[in-house]
Image (cartoon, rainbow, N blue to C red; front, side, top):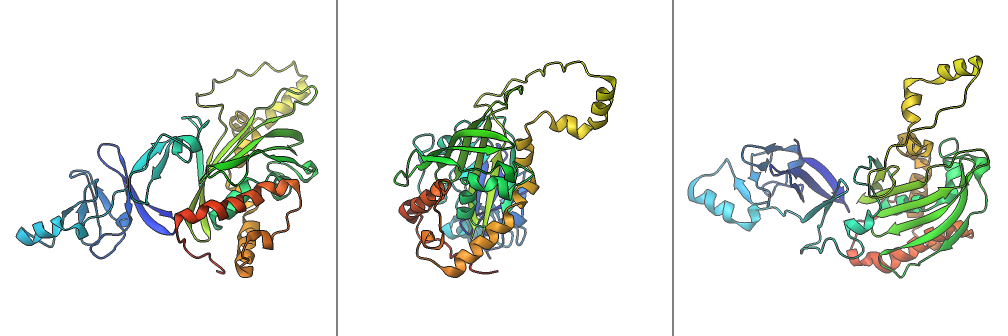
Length: 359
């Protein structure tokens, strides 16, 4: 019911939904005196977004429909002027994510790589999401997600423990030459179990994991590890992560009925009942890593590392990040590939806002 501000590549946008249920994305500046439209309101009677500063109103296509301070011929002339209008960007909604195209022209949706459909392949329509704005840039965010080597250390006690750390078998399946991204196979250990699977950088916004855990003797099989993160470059020194939780594919997973537990002694049964709080019963329906992934605590646990790493990188100002990093391990290959990919393909975006060096 209210306009929502959004940031992308250092520019401000306003997002709102019209009376037909269509999402609209526009620059967040009224052409009159550049006041933010996100501070305005949606006039449901007229199906317009209205600036709260002077009452100028715009339809879903961005055409100005009302200037309260004018009337007659002068009003008609002002409304007919292109300077009174704002751009309404092409929009697509896929898997509950709103995608807008701010580069001019009309994008081709639904075909090829880099489209919403390609980037979010395998994500269930019913998948839940968790969104968080983070005080470090998009490149630091993607680096962190494609780096399984930090998990047992930075997330000790959450997604694993330090004792899980071991040499990671890492194989790059594709390199930096492909503009659609790259993929890698890995084998590591987390939560006391060996894990093997594939990670993908689906350019330009998505990192996806699909892996399996080993089955320990006498233990039931673990659920697969499936994780998809949409990484959004909001502004220098900041990014937004939209995390999709556990999914079993494009179809809604069927609920499984848990097997009956073996008979327990009275003492054991009493202890079990003591531990069964409402929270534990609810959280017990989900894999532990899923709960941790959706928690702010999980993202907080390495936030300081990334913020100050980025700050130090900005201070050094290397011509290439590889000159500042020393990455001898096989586990470092995805980060090195990402930096090569950025050098090859990111210039297509044109000049970007300057990196924050200090704050």
